[in-house]
Length: 507
Image 1 (cartoon, helix red, strand yellow):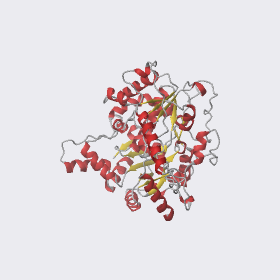
Image 2 (image 1 turned 180 degrees about the vertical axis):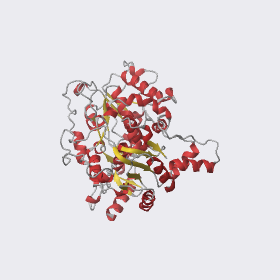
Image 3 (image 1 turned 135 degrees about the vertical axis):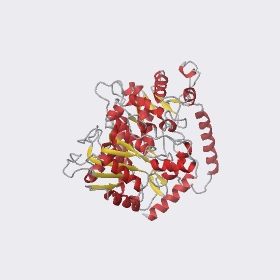
Image 4 (image 1 turned 90 degrees about the vertical axis):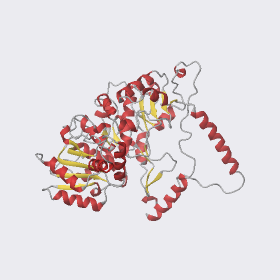
């Protein structure tokens, strides 16, 4: 594996120095018509950047053809596939999941309305990437809500770490998949499950199918609308974009790749986000949101760490091949039942300490969806405190030490029949062993486990954050990090499932 890793990392390093990117030509536009009144509105949403991109592309190709003409050797490929040694040691590419997405039954132009040739589509070409799954998922939910609210088919893309052509990326010296299909992470309407027999909203489709059906989509930018809105409630952002998109007659609509996000990172860190929760809580985006068979199978393989050994398995049988046009059958569907007696702890370590220190300098509150008024644990930034004291206060809530963690668990255990602990953490093994020892000294437990104790298949390893979210969602008590997006997603699902807010806590 070391030989493979060294070779691949050197290729990736070389590749990152090149200017070619895989998506430079993937966003065709429709030329605005002078007679189209919508396209001539004062806050024109059509991008003009594509003309410049096209010209730049033609010039670049011409230069390359000039430089590489003649009888010299061909330049080496800067992207995979490449002949690699020990290919089996590389991360999985989830081909069967991509194939499953290709074969979704709604990928059929002959279907009756609201699908087939009648369907309208919305693709967020500007969706977040190169970020942790927690950040990606929170935006994914909001984007899917907007598509659903405009009765357009949501166009889903991969969980993307890199837009480069390479199948693999370098993350802190580790080789990871550049793209993971969403069907390896989640299930439900966001990735194509039906909304219901009476729904007039078309099912979600893959980006590949969207490209086939929409070679010249209408491309929008967000700048003008965002400038006009300013700093407003998320519900107002949603309603504004519903009006904007409902006024568009075109079937195929796409947000430009490089335009600012509709729902941006600043909104997710602000209590302004809370106003959108009533709009999403009772929609199929949340009520039918589920985890993938891959995640549920990972849970099933480790279930003795979280529940009584006599409990019934989630899976009625082994998960079948994804080469079927229908989702695999699994006995458990959302909403998922709670796990009695389990307290789940989300504890960030590593470089998160530096992030926590930065939060102190910014006087940051808890993330928006960690700020529900019903939740008992609040955090008010100590605005006027001396710098050292302020950093210390933030670390207490953002980067607790073992003593603080044990005390919090002790408090939560009072009066509750908690008998198992699950620690979802990226902490080092030695630190986690010390934490487990300390927790074991405050009373008897049937089990104490950490993320490091779980067994994974090759495919499960790279989607393990979803497994942690699933466990946190079901735990009787969850203690999370109020500054974390992973925690935010767990809190959102617990609130939507009407879990007692007193059992959702923060450090």
